[in-house]
Length: 239
Ligand code: C5P
Image 1 (cartoon, rainbow, N blue to C red):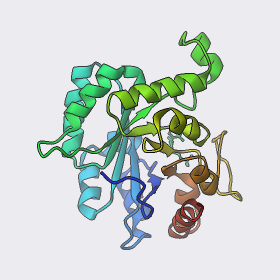
Image 2: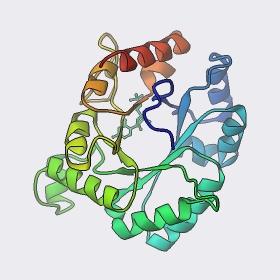
Image 3: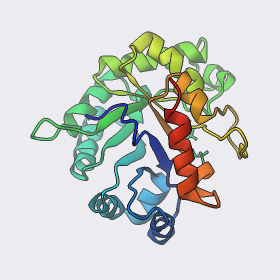
């Protein structure tokens, strides 16, 4: 398993709705093969074929489908995803340790290899108030994130997707080797869009992120390959 690969630790969120849009975006990168995050929109629009295509072109893939179901269903679905030869995927830690263990079983290939598996703890769109009042989960959201991260570690997962502001809490309870993959990243001089709790690539590194997920600051840039290079250099030149 690769971890902390300093040349490929900026993951581009490919929030496009079709193969054509994605291909015209990627054409600008020439022979460079950045890590790509494929989410529900593109996967549901184009199906698993889009993943096979990108893998055959040599792109590392984080498949962001956030599975959450009974353990047996998740295990079988993960086995299918693993055969797509993806590099990283995820699920909801709320599915319990048993579900996460089943996911690892399903993901593990006959040769013992498997994609990295990350847990979503609490979505950053879930507020403290909603978690307490709607979901009836008591306590501080940071403590819930820490407990879900510990559950993920106990189940054998590699890390979590979390806000850069939670990365140091996760490292504190789960250890430095437990991966943190963080969205919500913006250049100091660029628009926040709809992201609220944002941080720069440099600050994300300082707060303990191992990988950053960056969408619009790259996909909507005038020169996406330049913006990608800037992200890589700002994220990797500290420490
Ligand atoms: O364009 P932007 O950089 O905001 O894209 C961030 C990506 O990370 C999007 O694909 C978004 O869905 C995802 N994400 C996020 N916040 C989370 C989890 C995922 O922004 N808490």
